[in-house]
Amino acid sequence: MKIMSVVGARPNFMKIAPFIRALDTHRRQTSAACIEHLLVHTGQHYDERMSRSFFEDLQIPRPDIDLGVGSGSHAEQVGSTMIAFEKVVREQRPDWVIVVGDVNATCACSITAKKEHLKLAHIEAGLRSFDLDMPEEINRMVTDRLSDLLCTTDTIASQNLRHEGVPDERIKMVGNIMIDTLEAQREKAAALSIDEIIAANRINQDSAVRKNTPYALITMHRPSNVDQIEVLAPILEFLLGEVCADTPLLWPIHPRTEKQLKSCNLWAKAMSHPNCILLSPLGYRQMLRLNMDASLMLTDSGGLQEECCVLGTPCLTLRWNTERPVTLREHGGAGVLVGNAVDSLRREYRQLRQQTRTPQRPPLWDGHTAQRIVAELIQAG
Ligand code: UD1
Image (cartoon, rainbow, N blue to C red; front, side, top):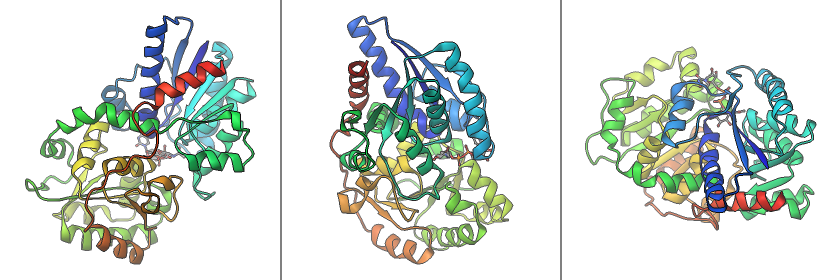
């Protein structure tokens, strides 16, 4: 059996690492040398901090094929990925194409795989925000509609697929593969020093966190939060004026957000606040380490909502909806949706900053999801 898996952007890397490891283990244990695996990187994320450092931290083998697609509009990214990936699959003829998550690479390679009559498996299928303004929601819907094997993280995701008419036998609830990576890296992350992480990554040079001081952590990159000054400026005002008045705020900054802050003339303001500690994008373990001790997370990332759930970090999700409802307070998680209007943000922030850490583990978020995926794949043949 020839398996080709695809990664494109930062959130894909922690999902593919355990899958490749589980495939290797399976091959070793069963001496099933007949399973061949090729890794394709589309190159949507390409720089050291958004891509290469994750390959090192997570011990992902070098991609066999790099499509070098790079940045661009959605149509440019999806179009050039499809053109390049078509050549690769025509040459390699894999039996299965494995895609993960919901980025442009996921959708582009799914369409190409099916047009080439290849079997397609989607890891992290069935997540729905029901918000078509999110590019990721379109990617999820297209990918799931085309997939032969749909590996879901939880029962809500499986139910979403059933409602869309996906035949039951294609849906496999396997748990959350992100948590495999979290568990595999937990110990190494715990050994890192927070001071050293800050010193190695800080952008505004005067910043520091005093030892044992509580701190908040933020990540923000969604177009809905950062692309318009009318939304971005009041959020920044709230962060600097209120959050930073209470605790230091550590802010690993996504390239999209840095660009937008600069083009809206807000960068200098963020840089000059003594309690706002701007950091370059962090490696996986560094981010996990900061999350472990943060008193509060503010984020619009999907993966961080899940990691906060398992670590118990109180999490203000800077979105009006989420495709990961299982991480929310009403489902037993640590997350609260606060959107991006300052009133709701402030209300929930005041409540949540009093909250203590309560880790929760939804069923099968146990660190062994990748093994179950490999077993399903082999059974599906
Ligand atoms: C993409 C994903 C999103 C995911 C996010 C994580 C889609 C539709 N979106 O959004 O789901 O949560 O990645 O980061 O696939 N850039 C760099 N260096 C890089 C890569 C990008 O500087 O290595 C810059 C680009 O020039 C671009 C911006 O970052 O202007 C955004 O990159 P892009 O891949 O278009 O989308 P993301 O916002 O990162």
